[in-house]
Amino acid sequence: MLDVSFLPLSSLAIPFVGAFLLLCFYAYHRLIYKKCKVKIDISRKHLNALFLIVLIVNFVVLTFVWLTYNSNGATLFAINGRSWTRALSAGSRLDPASFMHIDAIGAISAFLVSLIALVAGLRALADHRDVMSTLKASFMLLTLGSVQGVLYSNNLFTIFFFIAASQASCLGLYHNVPEHMKTFVSAAIYYFSRIIALAMLAGGIALIQHKYGTDIITVLSPLITPGRTEKLVFALMSAPLLYMFLQPPLSVADSACRCVFGMRTQIMFFAMLRVVFSLFGPMQGLEKTPMFFILLGFLSLLTAVMFAIYNRDPLKFAGAMELFMKGFILIALGLSINGSYSAEATALYGFSAFEGMSALWMIFLPFSAALSIICCFLKSPTPYGELWESGGLFRVVPVTCAGLLITICCITGLPPFTGYMAKQFIYRVSNYVSPFLTAGLFFMSIVMLLTGLKYFSAIAFGPANSRDETGHVRDSMIALPISFLTLYLLAATFMPGWTFEKCISPSAEALMNRSHSVNAITQWGHNNDH
Amino acid sequence: MITKIASGYFIWEPIIWTAIFCFSMLLVSCAVFFASRKTGIKYVSDVSQGDNSTKILKAADYMRVLREKSIEPWLKSQYKHLLVPLVFFIVILTIVFLH
Figure (spheres, each protein chain N blue to C red):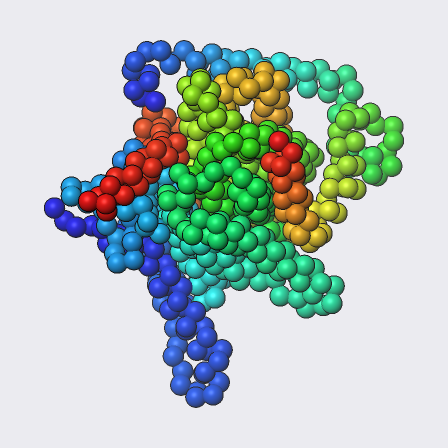
């Protein structure tokens, strides 16, 4: 049988190598070219081709990883300092001390991230307003590599390293360079806040490393006992990750950059899952934290509804919709933790909560990307303002409007769209915690659905201005990425059973099945003793 | 999911929840429709242009004022990036230590 254990490492290396090459090229032009005057020219066509090839190869490799190694809940690969080993192949042994591994949720998430990166790349290449540059391409690839790194990490320090790298590359894309004193202060506060957040994360990791002598999650999880240090570490690690997940999207109208920011947001929640479930689990002393997550999620829903009502700017609308999704995911997280504290709760609603949370989390990135691409497109300048102000857009850009309608229906969970498939788990589970919570979730969903439909009808069927007012803006500019995403959403809608069997259930089992790691460690210890 | 559906005990639950969701949606839609007929929901920009004679749904007006005067200036400020993680940290710390 063909040895394909090099695939995960290749998928991690490809974006980093691409980013490194492009950064070297940029640095050469900025630093050395002026002195030695030896010109190495790379045309825009070649840059675009290189960027696209890297994204396509990465997508193909990760598709193979996902299709080949989709095994329920188990660790698929482990890297232990020498090479990747296929942990489940005959004769191989899971090494719990591996600092990186891929399990089902990591493989599926990496595949999704590579798909969205490809979509964002296609959009970036077709964007005439924000033309692709060497620096932008290298930062996008760097973020992609960092995101995949977090998905593969089994080691707290590795997670921290890749999160820091993703923050740095996103800051490069954001390009928040101060020009005046006022903007300098505001930019300085922003950079300082990032440093503080990363320092909190690093502090938590250092504390746990100091106490237990390791920072490998599969080794730590059975060792951790309730105590003051552990509680402090939980707060130090979960607070910055929670904020970086919940923070509103940066105010940029570049859809490719917003897709990349969405990827970063997605991995912040993944890192939270690693901390909350894989590391701490249902630890004594953390019983009240689920209620905090549920309350925070509900506040996010309220804020999202407040921002969506009477707000006609597309980017603000997209921000409100994203916050709505994040609120639901947080509530699902709270319900999942709540359902893992006792065997009875797990049997009654725990596993459904896990499946609901996994399903919501899986669809967050495609929805976020679709919203970003559509809403940034609606901000396109026309001779009389922006595109969304023209009204009656369904006749001018029907594909975009159809994409927006499908996305709104999916996000707000209108049956039978794929968003509802995830939400009905949450409705059921919330009923076990409190019927008032279920009623509140129903109410929020319906208000958001009505608000979204009202927004859609206002821009799609409002009083139409003349066709000439939209200038050169046409559907074809975003047709390819939107078609990809819409096909994905429709496939998930029409094949819910397949989606659950191949994506959601393995992810939920990978999160819940902590005993697998513990058994592996015990087995590893026995083998070492003999 | 497929296994659960095949085993037969699971299939009624999604249908019931879908029905409850649709029924709730119908109820809220009717409530909004009748409320808008009775009170006349208008775009709040009418008020900002001094048209005080327009009837407005009060809750929406309060929501707009709250958003524009309190939340949006705060969201534009960079201090939120600094303060919110610290607030989260203090709240989580309080929750886990007071328990």
